[in-house]
Image (cartoon, rainbow, N blue to C red; front, side):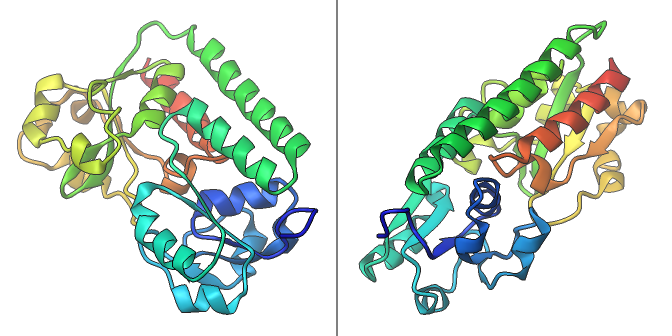
Length: 260
């Protein structure tokens, strides 16, 4: 690898794509995830991966000296690339603090430590400002965050943390530490029982159908449905643990401010 860090980088996910560009290494990125949306210029790069799948031969043809990814769900992709002799770095963050750590780790590998520290500092500062502002809420509304609809999956750890710093109360706090989606499965009856005052949906890879959520049998009794407090936050703004989390936090803070 070059003394100035990797010169040909493939990013298997949207968050690693965004991190690489934020660090000023966008010109070195030669392949990206098909889900990459930030920055816009990243979408001009060759698309070589979805999330749990990737075009390994296409990646190898790009001759990367580093492949970046996120999540244990990419373990098989990483295995195939490693066996082909490629350097691979997969982070597996689940919390906000782990997200900061992953960003700093990537910054170190890309020889962009100062840029990484600045990005993390700015992100931390904005989230802390949102948390301070949430103290003005009269109450902490109960929030159900739905990451997927069939099966129903509640929010991962960083989502629950963002809900809380925005002034809400995650109705499934005991589930969010689950590292796998299966550990966060919930039922319609579970949600009805906990009676959220706000529902936020973010279905990864597809548009959330809020009218379908509100029309689920028995959900007319849920406070959020009765009061029209069913919202969507786009997946790229809240389900990609990197700099974009601030976009999701701003939206959730606005939603909960109106609810509270």
